[in-house]
Image 1 (cartoon, one colour):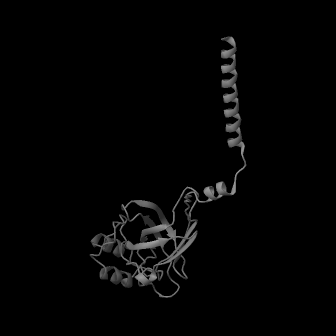
Image 2: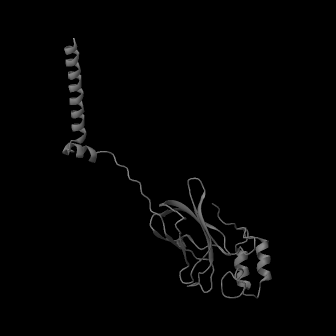
Image 3: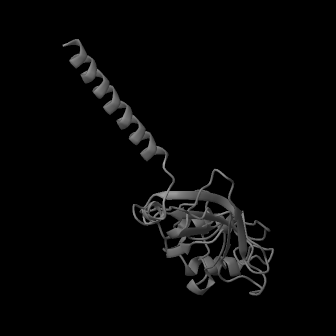
Length: 211
């Protein structure tokens, strides 16, 4: 009986030992060409985005005198997500140049604007807001020319900047007649006069676009 039990134990030990050796061989065996092809055929998903670093936009205020290379203003620039109407980013008082009306925004690392389609809202210092829809932003440095859409309308001179031209704006401009007040000098000829007043009256009752 003892010899029988001993034989059984030796047999079981041999089975376990052989199983272990087979397992180790399978785990340690070199990768075959078929294995490499299986890995190459596995689904791979890569996600990437372009983070914008600079936005240059061009906009022209209306009725400037002279009407060439005289486009400078302070423009508020807003990027909107068209899917839900939320504001992605907003910059106040971006100075545009005289020659072309270009404003330059340099994004810092915390201001992340991924490539995509957005709505843009621009408001000049004395001007009504103008909305531009379906604007594609896809490059690290993006240049946007809004002049083909028309000039931004002048006349919002009251301190409230309520984006609506009414009697408050007219009274504000009349008080500044004969001065060089920047806000009321709508055509930027260095003097607030009847030309600025007529430009403002022409736009009375008009309101700016909204997001």
